[in-house]
Length: 272
Image (cartoon, rainbow, N blue to C red; front, side):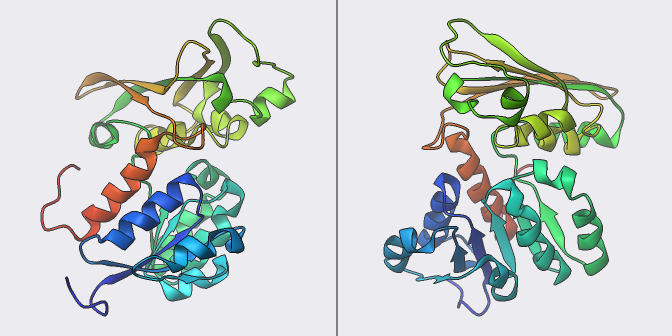
């Protein structure tokens, strides 16, 4: 393995289900990358296992990550996205963002990255086929639609349900709880619909991308179906994700981040 001085320094912000998996993968070794720091809302809760890692990354406040690392992976609550990403891209560095919905409330972060030579990377996450969508977007996409079905436990407490007094506890058959734009879906379901925003940013934008959300007591997996019609291809894709320890998030989300990091310095890179 290359000396740590020649490897790209990586930090992870947030040590929930996804962040923990990403940290452990980095610690086991990813070509060309070195784990140097982590940050958590309750640092004392994580001190024990972090100290036992081979790489022994520093456990530091969020505001220090941008200085220590070349790449910062955001696995935190969406309200923290700006405080994590802005200092990174202002320094011309790279931020890997999972809470994609927050980018719609902080669209200037993209301009900030452009001005300073930084980059924001959005992994495919819990979706499928974003490479096909980005390819189709080089031409003309006529329509893009996402239909999401989730177990009830993964949707309880979403702002859209609370604000509209929609109760889903105890339902016995599928219930459509939202239909509208990806922008509105992200506002109403900030912990659930990063997939909708990722699809919209890859394709025709958050206002033209249509979203349906179903609370479904008959499913045990988070299910997403994409339907895209363009001048180059018409395609539909479905993925059924096994929930992680956090029922709002699929296990494949963490694996997608790890795959994204592997691509950065890999000798062979597959996919758009």
